[in-house]
Image (cartoon, rainbow over all chains, first blue to last red; front, side):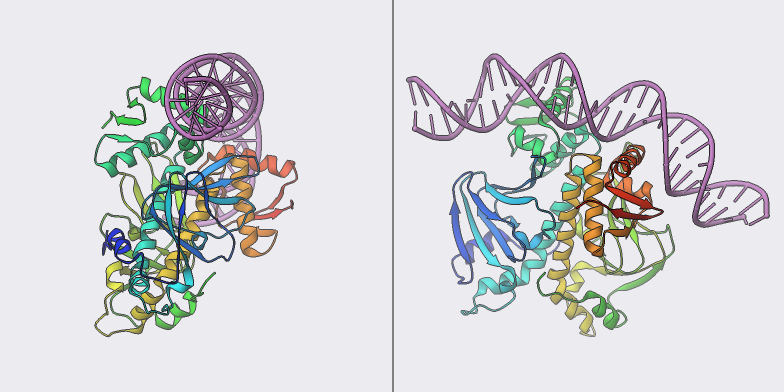
Length: 210
Length: 210
DNA sequence: TATTTTCCGTTGCAAAAGCAACACATTATG
DNA sequence: CATAATGTGTTGCTTTTGCAACGGAAAATA
């Protein structure tokens, strides 16, 4: 978009150089962190996949965000208002850096380059997050399950620059991500196939329209 | 939350001091800006109210965001993927500052303090935007119209620190904001009254539960 | 490899939400 | 002030979605 800071190389270069952070490894299904008010926590996912999940009072599970390599997350991006639990769950083995957000703007003892570079590039990183969230909002504001599915597929297709792509979710999780009932989503998926909008081979979707 | 930069005083102090920006005034219902790819535009709403509105192919109108005093907006926060039109519409008289995002990180000719302060505080400002968007996502992921309404009311109530508050929208616009059908929303609103969850006097809602 | 757990695919039925239409109130505007 | 435009409130009907339940496939685990 703009000054395209290369977070991947940056992290490779500096991920071992700074004192003021913790690096931890998680196995599949482990809880990476819980969003707790005023924790002031910012995390970077160095490797793996994880979901930010909310459980509401009716027992509904929602995948609020899906994180892959280099994603930023943490309670610092969230105003905790409700009593809903917000957890980050590892979907595969994950390596995660933990920071206290305010620390990023203070020099650390070693005056380390990691901190300096991170704080310089933070606006860009957070901006990327904003654009992700806006895409998510665009999906969620679609009125029907069909439009949500097609919108999501078209997004994945654009990202991969191909009409054919793998779903990063199980179908159960996809329903929780689109915030719809799983069986209703399965029904709609069947109709999309019957109506010639998509083909589905295992975990792979092929978009047939436009 | 963190270093709580006071954007209001900052803007008061500096809004007239910088060359590299445009300041414009808009009347009600005028189009403030259109989101166009690579425009690299960041705007600050100095005064008034405005909505970011999307019209989709089915003719549905969605209020994507609602902006009030001191809000940040602009295409720089958005990856334009679809063909949907994204417009910012003034809901009252508005005063708006326009920037090119990349310029904010370059010193302007006068080496002005506005720029300097803005770029220092930009992470915080964008972070505030992230938390807003996350709240919006929390609303949109609620499964029923009832939960969306109650969630939104509870949000307004928390902000005003009072069980009684004014809606910043007409009911028609509220439906477009919650992404539900207006008549269905009206029906649910009636049920909420009948079930003793809320009272409604003109534009004012009183939350009666909890 | 046997067994448990998770996921997929499906269905009947109930509930919720959308659509279309209308009357009336309120607010802008010539 | 008269008239137009917009917003509110309501309803009957249709469509979509959610819920609950189940059998079988696939994957994880002992």
